[in-house]
Length: 321
Image 1: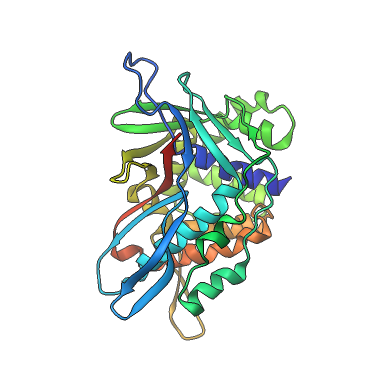
Image 2: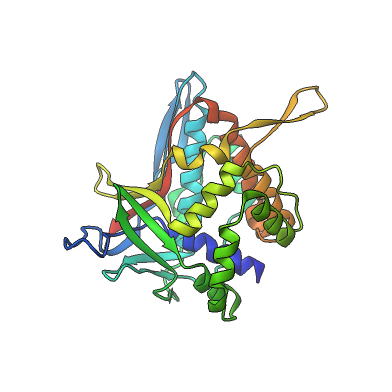
């Protein structure tokens, strides 16, 4: 059940990158409609003066834009790696998303996905300097057997220049567990309205992990998103695709590294960030499926370059159907 819960929340978070106009606005939103995820494309790309990488991911289901300072351009490679991972995995789960005029987000998705992602293929990228071919990536895409999600899992509105997505947490829990959680709304509201220490203690108890190291600012940000909605951005790219994404301000609390006060075997300070703490707790609690646990290394990678990051957009790359 924990594995299904993880993938359901991952799917909902993907769906949550969509919004439409507020119900009080008489103007019909231009975003209403059905969207397919962008086609996975790749080409040979010279990302350093002396190195050309074969099958460099150009477009796919995941949109990334990482701008940075300094001579080390490794973030560009990590960004391409994200496009490969998102472009490989999301089409195994998600077929399309409809932005309904009523304000609901409706997805055609795979109810119980069996994700095909060989960790050795990721290791191979680092050693060979080549990504898998487009045909190899597309070989695992799902083309039939989709389920249509209920209308009440998430809603959207447009406010103050942002596209805000509100998750219906009781409905999501009901869908994930198969048990009616509609009566938990008041309890959830009470928890989300608690002080950060209380929220960390409750979550830590559920995961059997110590979350006291997470900053209060991060807890306040997450509970605000859960209560009031997640503020996002949307734009039409030069190629006509629709990018819906979170920007750098949404990730600053999560990715900024800080010292734990400890040192490693070489005497260097041990660094962490809030997402590392949370990810390790989810892994230890059995929430993250085994095939997804290796993704934790990318949290470390992003954190290592966060101090030189000037722009960081992460979301979905979509094409109107």
